[in-house]
Length: 531
Image (cartoon, rainbow, N blue to C red):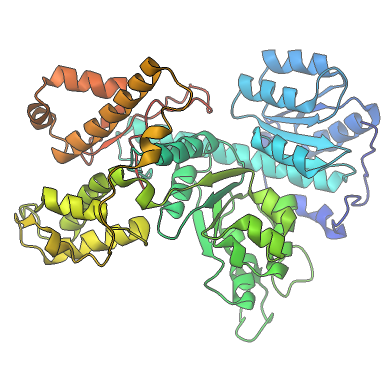
């Protein structure tokens, strides 16, 4: 499109003059830059060549393309590290190029530019896998900073991949988060988390307190290309405004009483990794405005500073137990910030909507806390069927966190080898056991033929039964086969069919990892992992 690049001043609305000196704050070795392959796709000659000249001056390997169809053919046959593509071009638009680039190399970073920005187009571009969305006009310095952040993300992704390969070669135990659960609503949330994890898209997690939002955020980080860098969480409701601003953005010496030295904030600590903004709706409006600029530009200004202090490359995940749309309507949450963070919304179901997961979670927590609190070799206690029914009948207003605390209490006070009865649980809820979770069955029957619905329900039963069976047998496959009345070959074949495997380190059933060479958006075959 016909929008010129400003070479000597920041022409993007709201940007500041001192951005032009920030390129040096993302140091990347010249020999590394020379290996970063960039293609600039824009049908406006002046802008295209100006961008290419700026990036070549920075030391990158740059290719230019002025026709959409030509760019599409180029991207299909050649992998680039960074693609900068105009959203609206004749013949082929930028989203088609984005999909083509990611299909050729799922690690490619795509930056979408446009002279006609809108909330809808920006969210759609980010949702389809764009690294960032750059409205025109923009300056040379802003382009330098953005491409520098993209190049840094490439280096972090390679670092994370090398770390994973080292773990596999050394047969070391991975620190990836294990999520337990087979309920359909929970599986849908985990499948979506797995799909979005390899991208840099912002995620908004909603759900009641204690339902596992932070665990899912950690799961996304652990399965992302940022897994080798820090996962940092900040609770926006736990700190007063002044302290929250200092914690997030850092401060300069003398900025306030007690600021005896310069201190980087959590945004700088999370550089290259992931920042979880817990209880987003409770963040004060002035901090929301300051955070929005970091999301848009990657530029951090510490409290008490008169200049920009750092450029950061951070993936944002937000979480809230409130209704974010109601907060936007009430004016307590900025609409522009909400849409930037809600690129991929994930709703985490409360425990009462996944009662079939309660026995599995209870057994897991009992095993975990028994090992933690008791001496090695102490005989494990056992939850009786009556205790399991009592757990399933409890309303669990505190969700998984409440269940976890209840089971830890039992693990601390019960005798080794004893059978745990309902009265040992000391449950405070007044609910009765639900007959069945309607969503678990009805959701599989809508607009399906009899045979399709039957096959779906049988598959769901088999997944849940296999997960319960092997976990009940603490990973002993011979014992699990005896309980089920089948031979071990049949048991292994059923687990393979449903994408389940026995974890060699814990004995618990987990979901089989999707091979690295499969597309990032391929849905997993089953959901045997938990929160």
